[in-house]
Image (cartoon, rainbow, N blue to C red; front, side):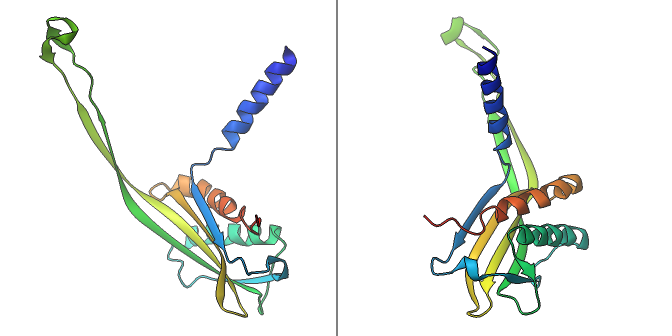
Length: 175
């Protein structure tokens, strides 16, 4: 019995930890040989963020690339281009209950209420492009969205998390 309870709790914990609030996807060039890439250089021309968020993105990206066995260099195999964007999102929710009071039983007539409410917020995304420096062609791209741009505390936590989620897909596992 204890064994089954342990298995149930372990399964529940695994299920809770595997959920991510982010939408992450990646794509790659099938002709690229990812084992030959050893060095990288980050290019931030398209990274339109404030200095605090820029540092968060670049520090985590460098850390993730180094855990993948890549080293920063001046004559790199890969050029890493990082971009950020955000969009305004409007959520519309409504509820329509059957009614509150009425005459004639469940099929009679009466007074009912419905409620509609909206919420507006900004959602951010990060895009990481890996470009082969010899051919100047994109060989891998990772995109992650779902960052709560309006909350500084959330960004502080979410930027490293989403960058780790994006880079989890590099190098790609060929099928």
